[in-house]
Each structure stands twice: as structure tokens, then as C-alpha cells.
Amino acid sequence: MNENKLIKTGIVGTVIAALCCFTPVLVILFGAVGLAAVVGYLDYVLFPALAFFIALTIYAVWHRQQVQGTNNDATD
Image (cartoon, rainbow, N blue to C red; front, side, top):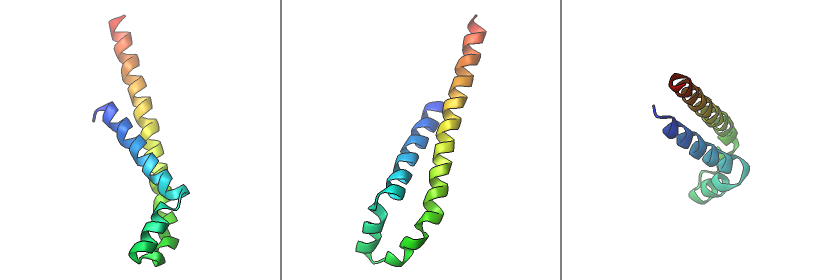
């Protein structure tokens, strides 16, 4: 997979998960739709998703640096 695509996916996922974790976006949305009973279980999904997307972003940046380092060594 392309490093840029991994980084974009990681950053977008991190931003969405962070918005849903730290702001009442989903609480208001679920309350308006009538799913307020599910709000108590959101943390079981959102915090692992946030951790996954942060780890994906870190991995993509690390992988990009490794590939660029290998390409720079090959040209020297």
C-alpha cells in the first residue's frame, strides 16, 4: 500500500475518532436519532479505534522514513 495513502487514512481516522471521543458529536446524533441507550457503549469502540488509527499513522510515517532512507542509501 502506498505510504501517502496510509498516512492519509491514519490521519483522517484519528481526527474522526478524536472528534467522536472528545466532543459530544455522536451523543447528540444518537440522541436525535433515538439511540441514546447506545451512548454508554461508545467508549468500548471509539478508544480502541482511536488507538488503532494513531498506531496506523505512526507506522505509516515510520515506514515512509525507512523507505526514503533505503532510497537515499542506494543513490549514494
